Length: 201
Image (cartoon, rainbow, N blue to C red; front, side, top):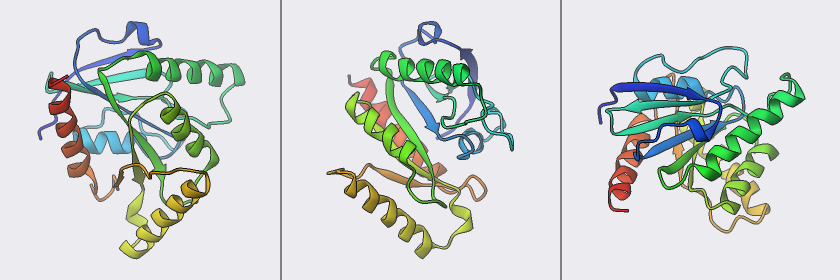
């Protein structure tokens, strides 16, 4: 699938997001999880702001692709150095987008750093999305630093933590590395599959 960027919108409210009835896919995760690098890898262009300092994305950023669908770059969460009031504003904006966007928000790619153990805040976000009937796919990032066996072991550990937290079904999972361009094909294949589903709604 080609990924030609045909437009870009930034908004601070779901009410001002693009009105076209086209499928969109939100990317979310803890600050510094590698979200911007992954987005840039998928679209093959440096469009998302990457920085060694977390917390740079503070708006709802729509990246229109092929004038057919959109990738949505949402602010990272868990960045403590932002002022408490600002963190609350961003959290409220993000959750309102996720719960009020409607059927055109076809799915969420939930980014998780594979190098560290399952984080409480990630588990809470996934549980919140289930409670709000938001379909999401678990995306492990930064897999380039591990061999295959270590990757599988880390995923097994994450799955076990979820089971211990009463998850009856483990979410769909894609392994990625922006550095090695791992997972791009799988993410675009999933988006293509969901685009076809959206056309039949």
